[in-house]
Every structure is written in structure tokens, then in C-alpha cells.
Length: 199
Image 1 (spheres, rainbow, N blue to C red):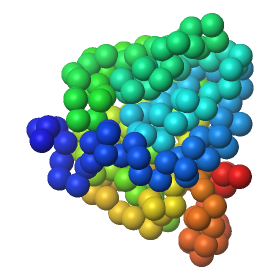
Image 2 (image 1 turned 135 degrees about the vertical axis):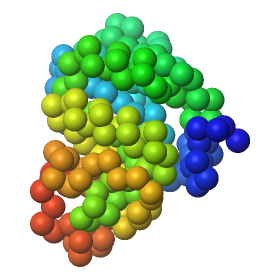
Image 3 (image 1 turned 60 degrees about the horizontal axis):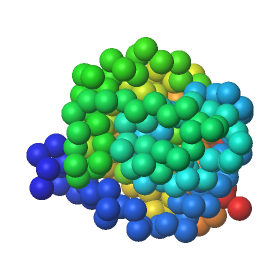
Image 4 (image 1 turned 45 degrees about the vertical axis):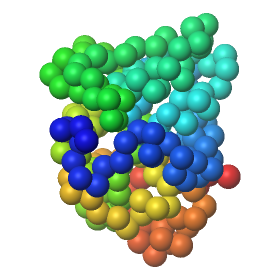
């Protein structure tokens, strides 16, 4: 087990097959929020990976990420996507980079929109991560970006993992699947962000 991966955090490979249909639906809905010429930041979640795969052909974007999987997914899109990999210390289990180099690279870039996932969503405490280093990095990214959107399937709703990094009032949008409607109706009816359900 990777020393930087805490108990309870699954590997990239283990996460990719979970709720795949929901992630694909969320991705298709979330890309509707994009505008041509924007610089977007994607985290190393498997939902963001599907979001990368759903980016429309011909839409000019700069995509910034610290996920090796996202880079591999977009590596052939050189005509419409400028791909920026944030370097750093590579973590094989999560197939991602992190650390001081990652953070310093990010600070030099303008980020219009940050799309990310997490281990859970609590209606008042917000989005959380099981990994403290990932929570800290995503917190920094949230503060650096002009606009932020959480991509969370229904299995994350009502779940609290150990490290909270995004309060509800810090999100501009949240995209989820239809199975989240009952929870949203009960717990997110006064949510301060734009709540969108995948079609």
C-alpha cells in the first residue's frame, strides 16, 4: 500500500469501475457549463476523468490537471485542447502528482473553472476527502480558481470522510445524478449553489 494513501482510500483502478454510468451522466451534464477559451482545472478523481472524456470536440480549452489518467485520456486532443500537467511527486496508487512543485505550478496559472469530486458531501459541512494531502491540495485549488463545481454521484451524498475542504457556500455549482433527488429535496433545498441533475 502506498504510504501516502490512507486507510479507506481506494486506488485509481478500484475507483474507475464504481458508479461508472452515473459518472458518465454527470460528465455529460457538467460539460454544458463550459465556455470556449476557458482554462479549466481537473482533479484526479475518476469522475473528473470521465468529464475529460466528455469534453466536446472542437471546443477550445486549456485543461490543467495533476492526474496522469486525465493526461492520458486527452493526449490525442492537440487540435482543440492545450493540456497542462502539474508536476510534482508521483503517487502510483492514485496516479496523480502532489507536493510543493504541484502547488507552485498551479499558482502561476489562471484558473477559470475547477471541477472536482470528493469522498462525501455533508449538507452543512460540505465536501470531504479521506486523504489529508488531497484535501489540502483541493482546498488550495478551490481558493485559487475563479469558479468551482463539485461532481458527485448519489453514493457520496450524506457521507462524511475525514477531511473537509469545500463548504457549501464556496461552491458555484454541483452536478449529480438523478438518484440524488430525494436527498437533495430533503437536505439541499436551500443550497447556495447551482444544483444540476444529469439527464
